[in-house]
Length: 447
Image 1 (cartoon, one colour):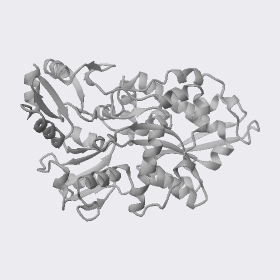
Image 2: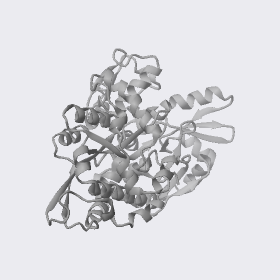
Image 3: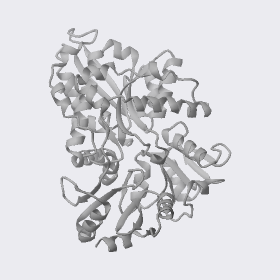
């Protein structure tokens, strides 16, 4: 399993929550509504949103408080993090979840408006940056970042996907402000622009690149993990809410840990639940949130993620979206530490194991894992009619991708998958005798 084990959290979840404190009105028989802002289709936040809601974990934790207060949860679904931040700074949302760049804007706006917020836990993350991908149309002749010079690229300015685009272009020697024509668009608009030909490429966050590739509407041009810089999603809470109702926030974080444990232990069922709630194909959800998916889930606020957040500030400042952001004062893991108890330190120091190749047979409650991409292809070749999906990790970055959408290289008897044509060709050029082959050829060789 790619996931970091959170089984130790289960013991903590059984502890009486009343010991964690209570709200100011605890015991007076009042009714308190807790408003949670989430992004159902930003599936790396599901343990603090879609999956958490479907499991009813937060409501159960609130019922267990036993403080004489009746709690109601108002779940509000948004397409991006920006409106969540707007509602939080207006005092209308108590807890929200969003990506790393929106989290920084959340911190900046909260401080600016006198409604400070804090990063209290992490949802999904990838330590190399694989959650963001730049894609092109299926028939595009663009094969590398350098081909983007002078082209129209759609992204959402202020998002982690925009951060990936800016950094990737800079590394390729292209001025991100002058070298391309950047189109500031919501993901769905950008996807339509790519299909219509009014955008040459699209840089977006989970789950858009995987969805478009799965639908045959796009192919990968740049794997965000090539940057080797962490990207993540997290939970933010209003400071006044956290101080007034610490037990409620801790209940939320316990519920998040419970949802994370469910995702880890039942990855296929979790993907099906999220798919049902969002309308996304379960195969796409699993690409990111599965047992060896692109995203790893655990609530701990890891030092390397905090460091990445600090590095992200310069990108937002350059885009004139924020000034300086005091990341250290924004990060506050005291509540998740208390909620998870002794298991927190273990999670904080744990690192995800390498991804592995997987096959998802039709009707199966679990996937099958293989020691190598070649072994997976042998299985696929023999089970084409009974296979729901097949996944392989990029040979250089480890980013999981659909086997039939990957770019394959034959190197002697080895069959190696890559997310993008450029990385596949780079490998072939560096290894004498290696060559790029089609997926059909890879299957024939494996068979």
